[in-house]
Image (tube, rainbow, N blue to C red; front, side, top):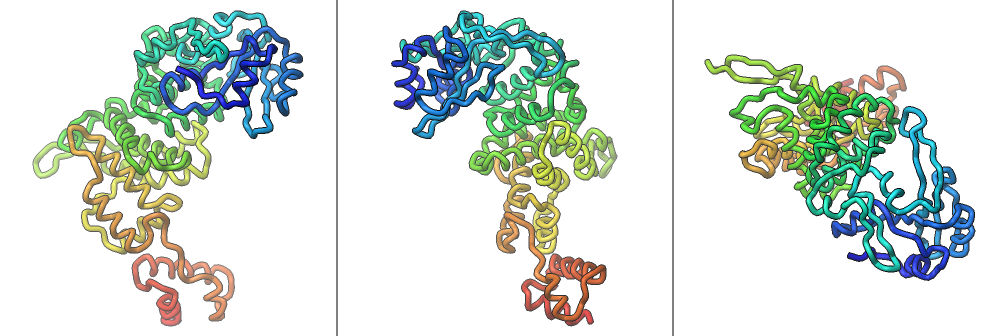
Amino acid sequence: MDLPLSAALAFILREDPLLARSYLVGGCVRDALLGIPVNDLDIEVYGVSYETLVLGLSRYGRADLVGRSFGVVKLRHPSGETWDFSLPRRDSKASIGHRGFDITLEPELSTFEASARRDYTINSMLWDPRRRELIDHHQGARDLADRILRHTGPAFIEDPLRVLRGMQFCGRFGLTATSETLDLARSMVGTYSELPVERIREEWVKWATRSAKPSLGLRFLKECCWLETLPELAALVGVPQDPVWHPEGDVWVHTNHCVDALVSAKAWQLSDVARRTVLMLAVLLHDIGKPSCTREERRAGVLRIVSTGHESAGGPLAGRFLQRIGCPSELRERIEPLVLNHGMYVEEPTERLVRRLASRLEPSSIDDLGVVMTADASGRPPGSEGEPRRVGALRQVAERLEVATEGPKPLLLGRHLLARGVQPGRPMGARLKEAFEAQLDGIFEDLDGAIRWLDQQK
């Protein structure tokens, strides 16, 4: 293994005497071992003071003191590259909260002691760029190879964010936590309220956008009892489903299968971060209304488990969950319509239905809904995977009407009514609304048709 260093960084780390005891640390070492692209390089420097480090790095570019209390210096090199340098430190819990630590910089700390403060063994490794050697005091490489998530030491319990980091690491790297790590995380359930919502959001976005097997992250939350902090998700556990349609098990089991199915979809893989987040959270929450709607009913003489109305019940629940994890409003507005409309099961959709569906989904789209519905259908093993016929039919009509990626836009606008003497105000608003409803019904399909319709209303 070798870490990919640019010529500029390799020269600085291997030639400058000031940096003789400098190491690449944390996630970049982990990712290099996994053979995945290394994006952010974090460098820890031993044996020098903070002031000396800043002065020495200034020879190579602009050294910004972005985190003096944390011993962090950001070096902006003339090549356009940017790297974070830091000093080893001791952290001690002083008060509640993610930031409630007293931090002491200790340049002479050993690499063993410094790495012991990191959350998991897979993040506690160091790479010596001069000797090109891995320093692995806590057997992180072994745990990574065995796909094990193990806390580094007893200091783990001081920061509750580490539990949510464990969730997204399990999902991203296919890890299973040790019983000891689960026990520690379980003892920290009461500290969830200490976390700032922006940090909670960061971990959920990483889970939603980078996971290879997202169900392992959900399983971690359940096994360490942190699912209790998310009542909308916890309520899914044990909710029965009709075995004819859901042979895989209860709603929680189904949801886990669905999120795993999503990551194999090209639409998710090729999406940007925002759309990946929208699709994954929509799939996670698509059946969140079932606990309040599931019951037994006799149909055609057979007792069946049904969840009538769970889509409409799920919208508000999804909104509350998303707000609690800090999901931005612009993403919530895209996720909730997908939850509300995911149960559309028309085999032969009409143009009217498709236009109205595309309008209801805004600012999401029928393309987005198709991805969610396909993940839903694929989350029912041993059933078949792939896009259901009804989704393909829906997509075909939407593409023909040019509403697959966005909802229909009103053809008749205020300026058209002004030209015919309709003054701004409630009458104009009512007439524009009426015109858009007629457009969705297919009464007219272009502006000329809209004008003729308008003239006929006089």
